[in-house]
Length: 226
Image 1: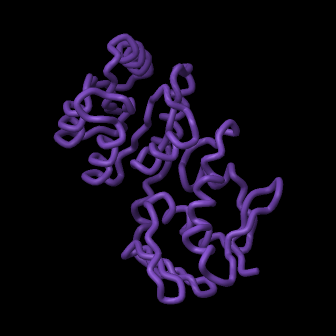
Image 2: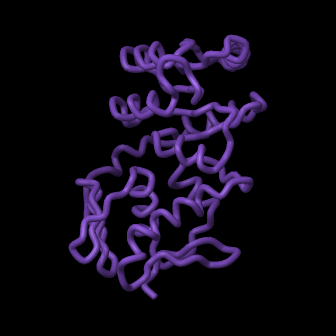
């Protein structure tokens, strides 16, 4: 497996590279965002691991650029910034997973295996219309409207809504949402799932009836007309 590691701290880059190579990965290092972007777009990699704070081009912009050019690329962000808002920014930029420094290399290895062992989901994006109550989601055009009003969602908000509509009228735990929508392990130390639920609720429920997104205390959330 070919991995691109974008990390400006040479000590950390060297340690991560050594650990990955000991597990039979082939690793290329870029020490700034511009070089990382150039390598990512010119070459084929199975996975990209990138810091957020990088010289020349920040990790968030880098991630957005890579995601736009290569939508199926797997990206893990490494950063010392571990607040919920910062994780939300990382996921919005297109990261598949997020690991806060300092971290145990074994955890990084587990995250890599979890991402790369998943089946390719591209075949699911074949375009269809989901309807529930007066809400419509078109997976082909990536549009959402309610009672004829277009609703602008971020990619992660769209994916969250799509999953909730596909699994309507049953309770979805935070763990399930993290694994199915974010494709990551749920970190009980943050509330990023609740943050995104609130974002979505404001956009599709606040100005409309009936309300569709409901919180079930101690269990999770349910998409249901009530």
